[in-house]
Image (cartoon, rainbow, N blue to C red):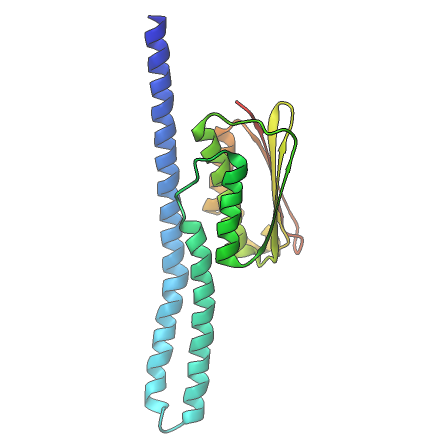
Length: 224
């Protein structure tokens, strides 16, 4: 009977983890889809309207037409940069490796898609996180924080520090951006997802920010 109850308990835990993962993915995709519609799609639509307005003046006023085409090119270049940032945010294929290679994977993708400088530091003796669900929650927190930096922070660099302490894991993610208060994103989906995942991990999360001084996420998580 005890063996059967233990098996049922493990199956329930596995099912709950699966539901939590699917719910988080659905929320992420809904948020990103809305952001794409409100930002990138609207920018492309505006560029199309501006190009249409060029047609009547191409022959009558070539200088004006050339200036408008230049503005369209600038707008499309900004839109391309936004798309590159969203490519990183849309990646839902989280690595199943342990934390250190998983974070390296995320930072590599982040650098390729944003061209921002990245720095990764690991201290202490590595302590394996055996639960795949817990590893995924931690990696999703890293991904969400990096996505916030890519989309909002106007930063030049991001630093991630992973510290293995005696009884817990400490993860610090910081950037040199404009700060959270100026961006008014404290009630956004990204931070809500980070807080919810920290709660699911029984972790402690501190978020520090000041105008012009960037954002720092400080997460402490017990190993089990």
